[in-house]
Image 1 (cartoon, chains in turn green, yellow):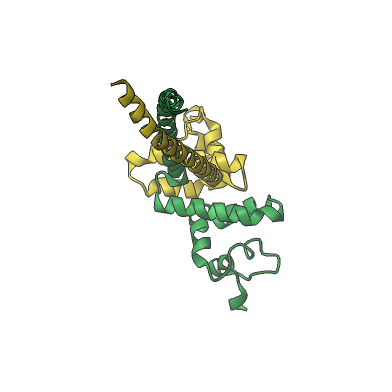
Image 2: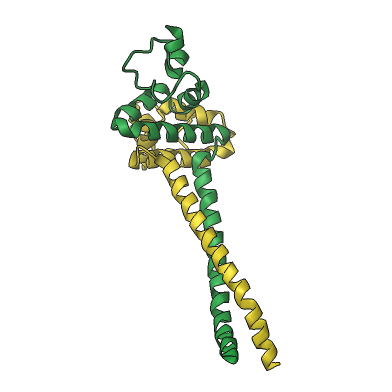
Length: 120
Length: 120
């Protein structure tokens, strides 16, 4: 019986019923996934979030909850929001560089056109 | 006495003690902030996360917890991780565009140099 319990039911030391909300998304061979979401959100909050979603969305939701819990454990101050902030900065840098290089192309193009006309 | 309770203690209908872990970060004039983190993480998990951090980091942690809770309420499937995914895609697009435009500059530069040499 024990071997068929999902990671959540194993962790919570309870029977894993056939309609267990966690079982499809927290398999027993990935115990860390449940430990992370349990530590950050608590089992009942994770269960509530999954329960409120259509079945087809629950897998993605479990995945993103796990990812956010993992980020929060790795970085308890900034969590996943810290990643959002870093990516915003990287995007700003890339967009500034793009604007600069586009301006460079615009400045070079007339010379290119002039040069082309020399040869034709 | 009631008016001096923080948003957390008001929501949890309890006395707000002088050493309340929530009071500095969840003031009574911003009740939604606490409602969001309470709904997603539960008060005790938020309290534990804050308690485990040095006091100087707690403000930032409360801010990012609130942001992630807000994202999860707005988008229960993808939450803040959905934002990370969107930003990754935008960054990829910007970096591809940058590479393309840089290649364009590299292709135009010899023509520009040749053109400059025509005039000097």
